[in-house]
Image (cartoon, rainbow, N blue to C red):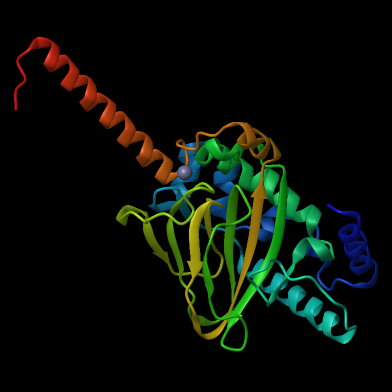
Length: 285
Ligand SMILES: [Zn+2]
């Protein structure tokens, strides 16, 4: 983190008074639903799969947060945003795409969210996303985004600056706002065609999470009424990012690289067959 951002964060933390102190340390039994806690404690692929659906390859959905936690976090975020307006503080928005929402790490939640990544998201990512650094997640960007007819309405097609993304709906009442997925791509193939099996639409349910690779292209449809708030945790692996600089082959995770590789293998096999037939001197149809 650059010095300027460190100072920015320090300035907020020394002036902003949190209202729900219980949010700022990990209290798993209060934050998570029992089924999620049990699966994490067992820490096996079977236990994770027992609470999850995988409605499309590499996209996992499950019930995660207690209503109590969602309400507390919504209330804390509202209080923080009121404070921002009252003090005329110039805050940085979560990313270039969202004008509404705030970075949770900037007002004191960094430690709790680090624990969320290390003790809850990394164990699952180790099993489901090993080829994109799932077992070595070591930093995060945690924020909330807000959608509504008076806020941002939708979010265009993009990939996240993360290896693994956790996206949990906090509430409130809303219609629309579905997530749409369009397949995992490397930098080179980010705009390539979508295959039908990569298309998946997901409707948010408060308290429920979606876990996916950051490079799975996605967007959010318009929230047509009410207000939708989601918690996002972009989890990153410095090890994976370092390795990626030297490893040019992304065919173990990019859908398009995978297809290109299969096509090259198919052509090579066809050429070899043809060569063998010619050598035998009896080409067949
Ligand atoms: Zn690729």
